[in-house]
Image 1 (spheres, rainbow, N blue to C red):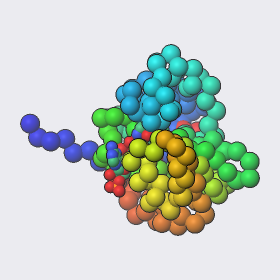
Image 2 (image 1 turned 90 degrees about the horizontal axis):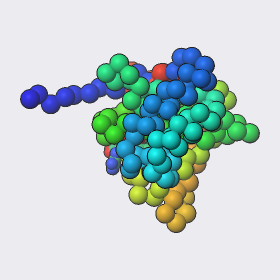
Image 3 (image 1 turned 30 degrees about the vertical axis):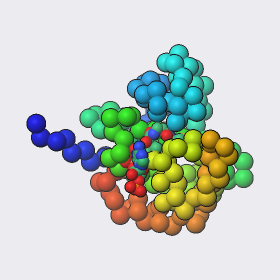
Image 4 (image 1 turned 135 degrees about the horizontal axis):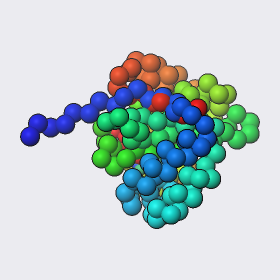
Length: 178
Ligand SMILES: CC(C)(COP(=O)(O)OP(=O)(O)OC[C@H]1O[C@@H](n2cnc3c(N)ncnc32)[C@H](O)[C@@H]1OP(=O)(O)O)[C@@H](O)C(=O)NCCC(=O)NCCS
C-alpha cells in the first residue's frame, strides 16, 4: 500500500455562529484520544464532559484546519483584558506530527493579533513536547510549575510567525470559525 502523504489545508476562521462552533468543538473533542484529552484539558475527561466543555465554550475566535473534508484540528482564542488572550489547540491523533499543529498555531497567532491580542498564554503538561516546540518557535517563554508549564508569547515580537504563515500557503493554514 502507498504511504498516505497529508498536506495540511490552509487554516481558516470557522464560519457560523457560536452555536456552530460549539457543535464542531464537541465533535472534535470527542475524537481526541485519552492522551490528547489529558494534554488539551489536563484531564482525560469522558465524552459527557467534552460535551459540557464545548457547550460552555465562548471563544472569541476559533480556527479550524481540515483534512478529508472535515475539521481535524482547532485553535481557540479566548480574549481577556489588556490585549491578552489564552489559547487552546488540539489536532486529532491520526493527524498529529504532520505539520497541522504548526500551521494552525502560526495562523492562530496571526488571527489573534488581527483582533488586537498582543500577548497570549498557554497551559500544558511539561512532557508535552509538541506544544513546547510550537511555543519555542514562536519565541514564547516557558515557565515550569511542577508537572505543568505556563507559556507566555509576545505576539507583537513574533514577526517570524506572520512571515512563516505567509510563506507557507499550502503547508497549512486554518479556517476561522466566525
Ligand atoms: C500539540 C499539538 C497541537 C501539535 O500538533 P501537531 O500537528 O502534532 O504538531 P506538528 O506536526 O505541527 O509538529 C510541531 C512540532 O511538535 C513536534 N511534535 C509533535 N508531536 C510530537 C510528539 N509526540 N513528541 C515530540 N514532538 C512532537 C514536532 O516534531 C514539531 O517540532 P519541530 O518542528 O521542532 O520538529 C498536537 O500534538 C495535539 O493536539 N496534542 C494534544 C492536545 C495538546 O497537547 N494541546 C496543547 C495544549 S493547549
